[in-house]
Amino acid sequence: MWLKEAMFLCSSIPTRKNCFFISATNIPFSSSPNPPLLLRFHTSHRENLRYLKSLGIIKPGTKTYKTTPSPESLSQILSTVNFLNSQGFSQADISRIALVCDHVFSPEFNVESVFDFFKFDLGATPEETQGLILRCPQILESNVPFCLRPTLLYLKELDIGNLNLPTNLNAHLLNTRVDKLQEKVTFLQGIGYSYEESAKFCARFPAIFGYSIEHNLWPKYEYLVEDMKRDLEELKLFPQYFAFSLRNRIVPRHLHLKERNVIIPLKRMLLWSDQRFYAKWK
Image 1 (cartoon, one colour):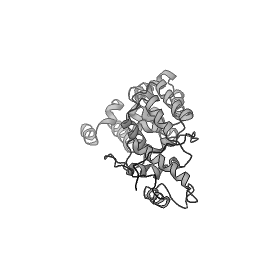
Image 2 (cartoon, rainbow, N blue to C red; image 1 turned 60 degrees about the horizontal axis):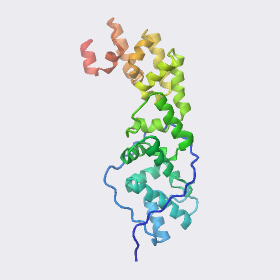
Image 3 (tube, rainbow, N blue to C red; image 1 turned 90 degrees about the vertical axis):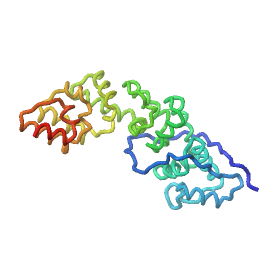
Image 4 (spheres, one colour; image 1 turned 60 degrees about the vertical axis):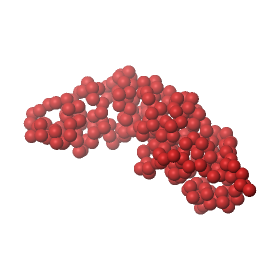
């Protein structure tokens, strides 16, 4: 006789994953109601293996599972699946998590500390927590005391708020090491801003933390001051300048205006659509 669904408790073992900035994945995630996961005490070992294989968690021959997990290990893996389901994740969501960070389903891994962080440190609702994780599943592998908590404190120090909202930017900011965040503040100080000005700059434009200094920020800064002859005050007024393509937007529009001896604020130069911009300055 089949027994009722059983919820297994995960063993509490600290994670040792370091966090880093990961670009967003294009795999869609589920927002549909979550069907119950039918995990039973007396389900056979083979049936449990088949079930976990269907979710993409058990992948024979990979570095994660070189041999078939023991019944004890399988029980711990199933407890993680059950825990995620209890937090609102559908089977499709769990399959997606397994695809991009299968270490979460290692028998010795504990994901509950990350959920505690979202609830108690970040103040996120279960729905917000689910949204953040699905936008950056790798955050489940991040170490709470050595990565997530210091990052949150540093972002708050910069006065970056609403980090509980489930956006791609917030999810990846929270999964970024403090030293990587500090690199952008140091860059801004290096081009002439004070620490306070740099902090305000980042608070107004937190997307800057996702840009490469070498391939994005520095080339755009050089073009701004050397070719466009603009100053830091203009950049301070419009930090979103760094979000636009140098090759496809900034350079063509600057040269177009230069040929016509027209000087306009950066915001007006870059925010307008091509149709409006080129119709205004023919």
